[in-house]
Length: 368
Image (cartoon, rainbow, N blue to C red; front, top):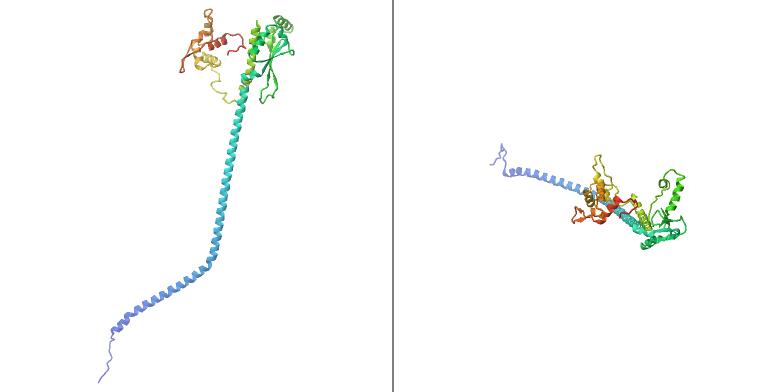
């Protein structure tokens, strides 16, 4: 007979254990399924949001295109402005270059005009425009032929006239092409020479003595600016006329040297004076400068003369002590010039000019 017994304890079979062991896996699987569902949900949401973004993308593209066009336009405008700026700078540079070129041309033209003017004012050119006017009364004296032959030999213009002051010699000059003188105008020089006999001079002097207590010579020089010269022959008269003509030919050039717009500086040690102290210091330099005033005299040559004769009075004394018949110019002619590559002497030409400078009584004498 069979009977059934109730067990007091639970017996767990292996299958149950396996079922229990499988429970956690089911939970994990559930979690995994849940996570998958969540990921799918998130993917769905992402896809939906992506669809939303895809809907906004055309507008954004339009804005992007619009911004790109505006930026491109701005870049083009900037490039255009830069090109205009470069063009303006080039034009400005071109204008400055043209202005500088024009200034150079003007300066070149001014230099050319100045050179032409300077060439016209040279004595050798001015003397060609001078005319010596001789009054016809002087032709009564046969000695006047010496003057006429000399003027013709020098190829200077001369004219015999019946008008004007009798016994007079005057000068006129053809106007040069300068700013202050009209073209083809004739300028009368302020120099007038009268050749009169001693008797005529005496009559003139006697008439002046009645109106003035001064000497005649003094009265004429002070009130009439007339200088009387006593010349013994027509050759001396001719020499005086030649000297005055040469002096008049140098006037325009000397007047130009007074103008301030020369191409060289007028200020400097070479044109300044020399300070002379009470003890006589500086006189030697003054004596050297005086010798240097002559044409073609260097500092070395002048110092050679002043070293041999430290003062003008000593040189004059040496001239007076020369033996009779000896030429005065030999006193300085053989002096050796110290300095320079080649040895040289003072020479007779300069020695003669220095002698005339110190001994001549004629203030109008040309030393060169």
